Amino acid sequence: DAGITQSPRHKVTETGTPVTLRCHQTENHRYMYWYRQDPGHGLRLIHYSYGVKDTDKGEVSDGYSVSRSKTEDFLLTLESATSSQTSVYFCAISGGTSGSYNEQFFGPGTRLTVL
Amino acid sequence: AQTVTQSQPEMSVQEAETVTLSCTYDTSESDYYLFWYKQPPSRQMILVIRQEAYKQQNATENRFSVNFQKAAKSFSLKISDSQLGDAAMYFCAYRSQGSNQFYFGTGTSLTVIP
Image (cartoon, rainbow over all chains, first blue to last red; front, side, top):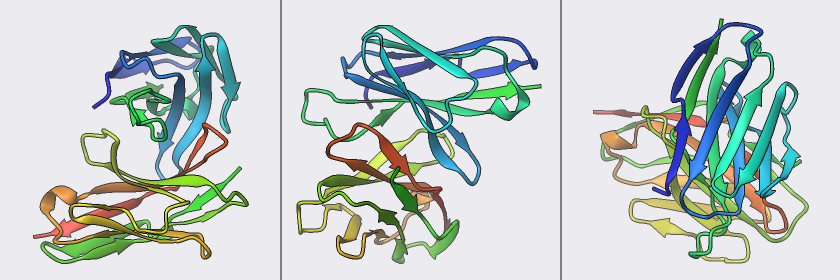
């Protein structure tokens, strides 16, 4: 698998607290993505990045912000977590130079529970 | 936004038999890519197979093959000689050539019966 790590892998937090999830890649891929996975909804795009400091919203971006200050790191922040943000969060990358430009590679996921 | 539809939330297959998972998509583009991803209980998303829309030949990867019908906007996955390790959630995904956004279906949960 591509070198993608996510931290933390599991987190339990309380409503109203800020939460930051980190995605780190060692593949020098240009594009990075944050998805959430919920039963019956598949994977839904939260935000994505097409370069350092270049980000854009996905279909479920409300309540989330992102930052990318380095090629290898893409942070997802929940400013004030709500129970509706309980989900499994996946980071993905694409846009490498090894001929795998067209597909995405995924991190292992982070299970977030908001009480 | 493009729509990807997987109409079978659950499927089951006997071990060693063949099963076909369905996927349809809605697009006005002519150049795009289609993918099938597998998500076993470990939760890791694994690319199974991909198809470029400009290629008429259906993609094949060992026991996995697709039936790509561009005019019908259909992209089904056939798994031959099913194995217990094939049990997983399978997601169909679409990406336009001119975009870096991927669109996913809601998934099909495949059970393999020994």
